[in-house]
Length: 443
Image (cartoon, rainbow, N blue to C red; front, top):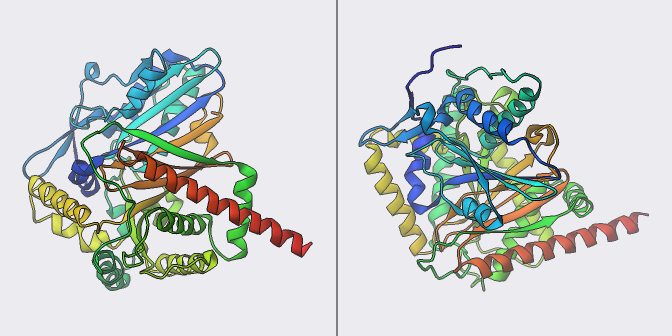
């Protein structure tokens, strides 16, 4: 086995996630439910071995005035697994913020009931995005299964796996760079800032930081109808859900028809890497803004067509990459501590004037084979990042044919988020009913 380095370089996306830690809870979680019990000793060992399989996970994030870095933890300083005595302790763990400065960068909690286990895996955003969390859980689960047959099993450490954005940019032809840089200003920055004031839910921020996760579930038969509805209109499930959120946010925000209909969406840049796999554990995400202006009516198909057309156009122009040509290079001229203060103040100022667009993130599908700990969980879902009020992040993911739509809330935003999620479900129900009518008409 190769010697483990003591330090690792912090990449731009590590630093960016740390820049914005001041605006919200910068952690990602995956929650699994099993209809039987896991082997606790083997689970604990698999978690510990994962800290070596992806070495950056077994580090703490060290901040410096100029450039931060990752520092490996000693073996006695990296306990990962906690056993919850009851549901209350489990929920307390779920709300607890993982500290990247202490490490390790993953934590796990197991809640055991008479007939089932609940497993929660928590990851600091500095080290990973959603796709990285899938990879982490996949490594833990495969190691857990291997240990059942070979107690001496050790996954090979991925010491030199590429964690940089260059693993994406190297696949972008140089002749595309001018268009991407143009889009940074013309499609992303300017439409994201002007006209001032984006649509938002009526949340009055307070100091209560009691975190709660709210979700709604769409089961397989219902989901198939929604997918088919989109397919008939040459739109993806993502397009349909984004359109539903636009209408739901407008309906539950007392929209004045002057605030801009803007949402931010997340893009997994692994889509530009052959095989869609990163070299190492990392953040490889991008952002886009869908801006419908003030043009929204009761015609859902009209909204869906606009969003679908926008997404097709952006996918043809290296969607999500523009930040790495327009913004990332600027950060090389500023010390980390300075950039962190500047960026947080800019974002907070935007929130105060209501000009920071809500986030609606597609977390993608959770593959069953990647979360199988000898047995597959009966339920699996993501818990995403949660910004402080009044800003809100929504997300959706799927597992085994079931779609989960969710958001993190604070006491001041809970009712508004529940209303919005309920409105999304009402809209999607109407679409599935419309799909049923179309089917009957064809028959």
